[in-house]
Length: 156
Image 1: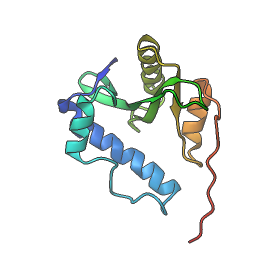
Image 2: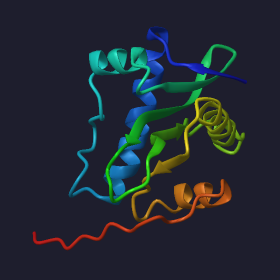
Image 3: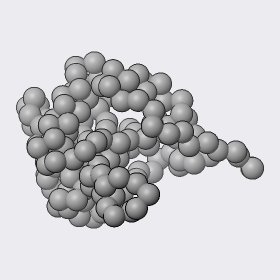
């Protein structure tokens, strides 16, 4: 398996995986996520693939994309009340449902950790939707811990 930056040739594979993620989220929170849609339009994805502040990595084997990890550079500087931090935010990590259990997610995660260390980041952050127990379990195994909790009260 090889992990590399996403390229234009990966567009349809990444779009397929984005649809898989959306369906997981739509099943958990149909009040927030619309089944049959995806997070980005094709041109938005192509623009993101080229953006060094938003690197996307893909895991590929025999020319088939097995998973991806979308990242976003975040930096806190001179805030006064918070320490300066260079953070790599993991916006989305997905492994194709047909490739789960083959350690693709772990390989992507380890690649991103090494990328972040080499680039001088202080930490990694991510969010997990409540109810996504598979994701929570995976990130627990990778050494993540809860930093803060976002709470919600539905009014409708």
